[in-house]
Length: 123
Image (cartoon, rainbow, N blue to C red; front, top):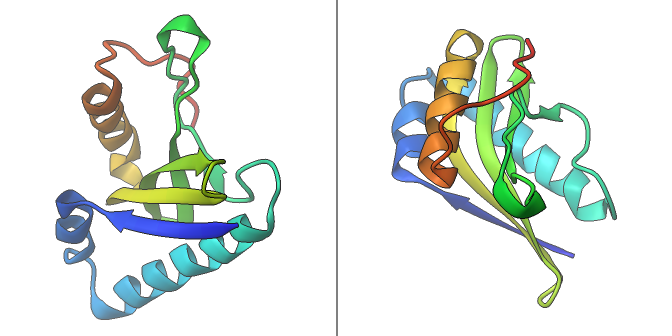
């Protein structure tokens, strides 16, 4: 299984707000996560979660997740499985401090899915 990483302008802009040491740590953590995901047949692996439940129509499931990098840094990303080409596509959307996670997750999910409300907020 191949892992394809894509980034967005917002992710790149967010990343530059962190110092060089944090940027390196974020990049290394994302790479390590990708290697772990490459070897997994099912599931998203450790440190990946959805801080809020996103209710989509017709039983669709959201591919938006947060990856815990360290105590105060989270990466928002989508993880999509392409079974035809045997690959997983990870799109890095944002990187934020944990204090801004819910606001960023809410905003990103609304943008991706045009949903009005998130459910089951967890910390």
